[in-house]
Length: 188
Image (cartoon, rainbow, N blue to C red; front, top):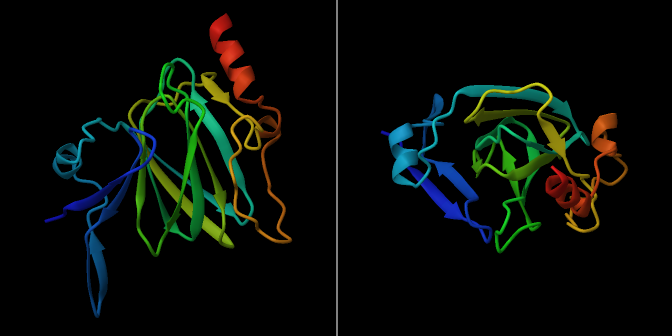
């Protein structure tokens, strides 16, 4: 029934997925995930865990990655709107250290596929947002890594929220920049 539209990005591996939405006077229906449709679109990863978070406007989560147990992620927003960002951390990639951002919302119903070895984060643009994502590996406590959301050597252009200040966890304020990540990964 489903079928999806897939847009590739300037960074190889990242994909924006738009599902087919069937609407009538009652509302709408869509398949948010169908393995066969995704496999046909080049996304054959097996997802083993679903996560969901709720946040208020200005909350910035990220930039996170898993060090030893990397995950492919399929992310979407079911309520509100976020600016979602992925940073290429694949060793030897032509786009290493480059970032790509996309607006995900309950209105556009887009999903963002982020392969392993990318840092990921998002900023809530609406007053409230609910964010859902599938992961290809289970969460492993203590395996978290991160890069500062404002790392100058990446240069992410986060949307301006006017008078609303960004809200981050203390740990997310203390991540290093891309050069720190490279140095740490060489050490070990």
